[in-house]
Image (tube, rainbow, N blue to C red; front, side, top):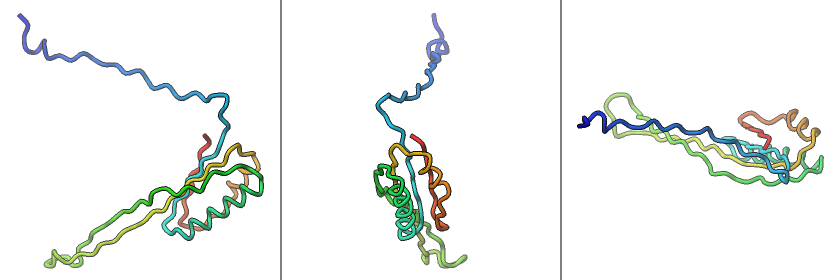
Length: 128
């Protein structure tokens, strides 16, 4: 007879590591630029600077593509002791845009690294 412990043992499952996607020969390299800011006007101005650099060096650009706005809401008590029902609500909005520069040359990459953006603008550049 088998005991209850022997029947409930689980076999060990070993997963194979994921293989990375191999680039096909038809793909061209491109830069994916993701820009984030709290104010949309400053964000649009910095996007215009990036687009001007791209058009100056004659590269193909896809975008800017607006991504969903990230909204963080905070609720805070107005007083510390007795008035629990009196609260204030604050929110932070993070606006995001995406630009793809297709087949960039080294001059474009150098110009983007030397780009001076206003404070409050966060830029992430990935080579795809």
